[in-house]
Length: 407
Picture 1 (tube, helix red, strand yellow):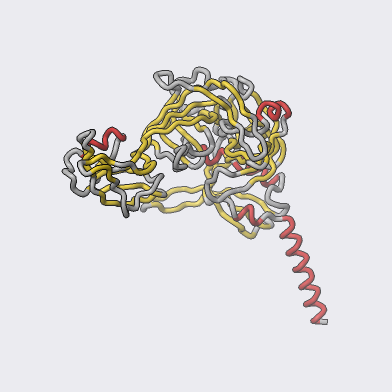
Picture 2 (cartoon, one colour):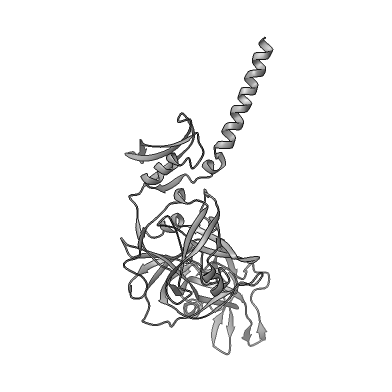
């Protein structure tokens, strides 16, 4: 009898395990970031629509903590199994619903780099002929030349001035590589044709690009665009920004995307005093700054609330783009979502389903990065990349990651 009871108990536990495992999205819950922005409506949807499974509930509570000796109140969001067993607890920022002006307008970006990007080596004309200085030196293409003898480089024009008094003696170069400092010592050579000391490096201190405006924060006029970083076109390195400007673009043509061959929006913008705003951040999930001239950048009637990743679900959505000459909504489908514990520009996979957009562009093309994605009346993300194997598909980034840079 005892053996039968143990067997029945084992079977019941096995059934219970299968029941829970098939109805609870443990991996999605555990992959949520430790800090999250969410609205009360989104928390209600989690519970009412069983977003993480039938037996999972989300509860909000306040917790008193001590930070540097000061008492503070933190808001916590806990996911529980059967309303009892904690699965994961997050630090939550409860938002009343940030509203933004929706973009969809092509922008031109002109960036000034922080330091100088090393493109390669160059020869120097000396009294002994043409020489190079980089033998056995660990300087790589894509390094950022940041300091000379501890002095920050403002621009490439600043380099000869910093080398003027070296008298051919060894100088210390501070390079940035993969966000880490690398120190290299090098002896400059006197260029007889220019009568100045040179490092034997080919460097550049500016970059430009084209992308799409995603949104403008209605509270502080800060914008988010592109959904991924601007990189140097030769080295592929992410451009560290000291300052920059944005310009409204004119669309002059479209190259349709094909399988194995990405298309592009051919845009033209003129630099000068007609800039629309300034740039202060260039990072993995977008370009950010402040709008100073709103003319032609936004529609005062097109303002929507932000939707966090908690509100994103596979299914129908809208993409906003100006490929026709004016901002229009196009049908897309969100195929797959990832809750992402760390920031990434590949938060979800999307597919273009709108015949008008497919006729114009073939799907997603270069220059559409940053195009806003709307679902259930909320801005939830922006286009970032196209699939080379299928231009109708691409990646998009959650607007959560972008919002962190416009507060």
